[in-house]
Image (cartoon, rainbow, N blue to C red; front, side):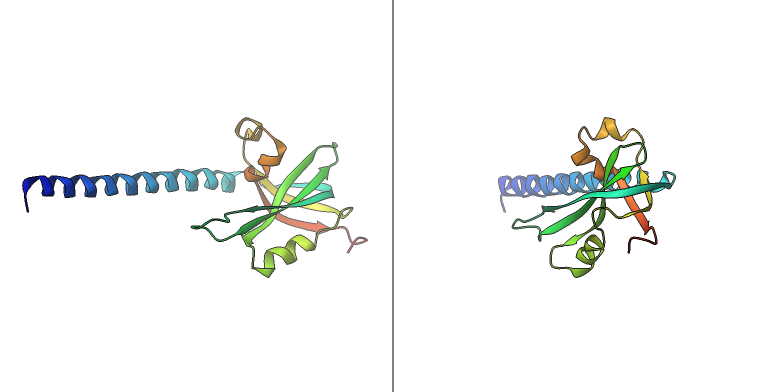
Length: 144
């Protein structure tokens, strides 16, 4: 091997290592951000289900199709917040079952967590479900 061949190989390996480190750092930052919500206090509120939607993503050559199953809850103060009640690969039945258990008009106690200063991180309500964590929804006994 000539010196120029060695230099090309070294540059190639160096570039691969740089990309691997960058990917690991990005994954660590995403994980750290998602962990913030786990340290927030759980909130419990009386709510009403006012809407539902499914956000599909990941349909590409590297990712299998997945879905976020999002439910809109109306709070006693009139505000509406969306939470992803389930997520998963589009072919899985469990997320769909959970999502389908919610009906418009259902009332009950919602338990959830929300990151601090959510309005600063996500500018629209359509994005803010990313900063909330669904824990449970206990339907009022009259609406099962």
